[in-house]
Image (cartoon, rainbow, N blue to C red; front, top):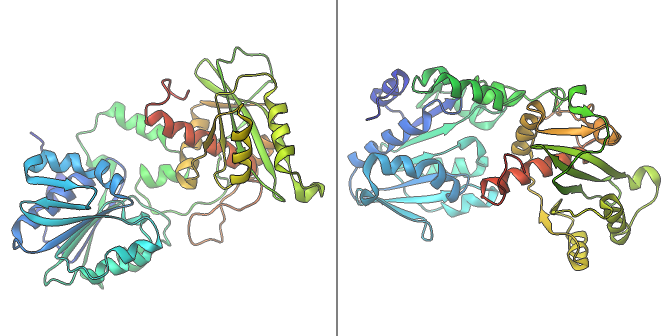
Length: 399
């Protein structure tokens, strides 16, 4: 039997307002208690009222929330259909929707809602959130929204959380220390998982700006001599450019650590030499030599080059995952934990690690689009392999 923490108990028995935001650290108990309160709210409303649950996608909503709902009310009281994006909760209609991009707001136009649950609300485009508020038109309608802190200029912070006293709005801050059910070993592990700005946001629960070097944890300890090692597996990651630089990195796995074995780097703008797809393919073959390379992760926008590589038949091409913030987060952890190392022959990659910076002039989280091509190749490798590992395609911790 689950016993609520003191912070969860305070939230559960507090009087709700029209807008209810739960912000703070990961694993601090926000999702669990907010879902329970949302379900209680649904159960108290007339049977013909309609509600909505929103995530970045319906898939993420299912992963983050459905198991908790089954724990609370059982599968017999929560019938969800991802195809129709509709669920039944105690016989009441609950729509399921994703807020992926600016086009998403069109999906909820015309709805009349008595309540909304928003999972990871800071990931939604502002147009969707504004439209959602207009749909909460039933008298007494309420919104429950969870989020981890983001940039302090995020619209959720500036237009709602910071103006809570002016609006019918309640803001609850949940910290890791509020979740007294977490063992110390897990807390220590979680603290090591996040680095830089992500530590401040996801562990300390602070709304803070990304500033300075993107990878301040990169140091000489991440650079190793270029020597022969018994590599068990090879992969290549690639950021493709025409006038902008093209960067390729050959990676080798040895004793559970991935090494940047060697690199290729060419800037058409700086050399005044624009290379063709055919020329880049020859550079890829030269980089790999006679090695067996398991996968080549390529910037998904390089469609013509991807087609060429597939036609040649030697390499298995995978579209690289281009989730920038998530990729940076996991690359930072991999660097800090020495799960990726850089051979000292990879001079352009090492150079970019020392220059790759956040854009301090941006209101959001943005990197300066300079000295970033080898950095994109590194991020493609870390993030894409991580996602494949999660899907069960790879067996080792990072291999």
